Image (cartoon, rainbow, N blue to C red):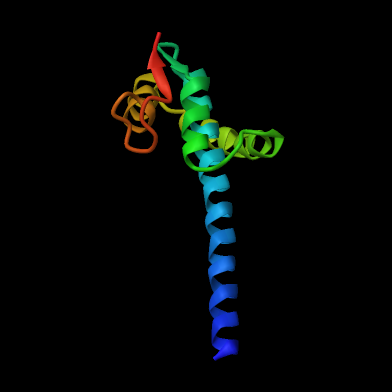
Length: 111
């Protein structure tokens, strides 16, 4: 019985660590993509306040590690969307990060 309890405790702890890693990666991905779209689309501005709130809700502090990882996702978004027509990229930015964004609402606001 003690072994079962120990095994359950370890699995639960590892799952918590995995969730924390998932949150970190998710925040870095959202940060990088939204920042890239904010640079690509002149009518949209990246909201630092909304990003800080989003990260806090996920239990992640925006630190050098998040910003470094976000750089990877920012470059990836530029590679994927930077060659497409601006209207197409900006429409996607609005769908993902605009006021009713499906990925993270209100990270991009109209200027």
